[in-house]
Image 1: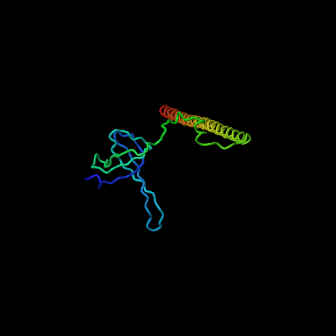
Image 2 (image 1 turned 30 degrees about the horizontal axis):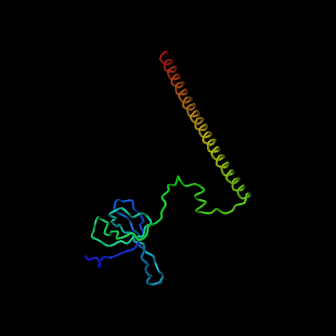
Image 3 (image 1 turned 135 degrees about the vertical axis):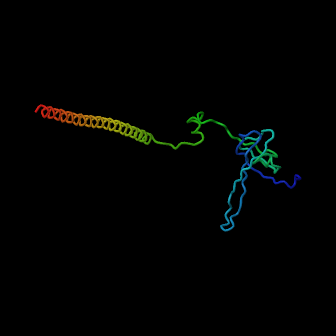
Length: 179
């Protein structure tokens, strides 16, 4: 194929985790045939990046090429602009960092006190429910042990009555044999 016939797309790098491969998201606006509203479709292409130069957030131009792998049919022609993406782990984020990004509303001291009081009452309620559950489980365990003891006493009583009946039968037999 000559260079002029190849398809060219502009997109943004979404992922650069693979070796010599980047995922590029290309937006294509399309007008809805009935409602005439412009719809944004996003296609993701896997493109070959020979030097591993692309990073997430970069705007790139990709060109259609021969199949390089099962899903890779594009290659990065050039990086148009470098994207500024700060890589930070969740553990490194502090309240000050969040305050810079999301400004907090000005809250009066009364509202803060009310919120703290609500949190305390919620915690106390949780503790009370936990204590109730523990008490209920203890009560259930006691009831089970009592029920087992009753069953055992019933079984023992049945055995005793059976033994008495056997003794009486043996006495009666012995009396009959004597006579």
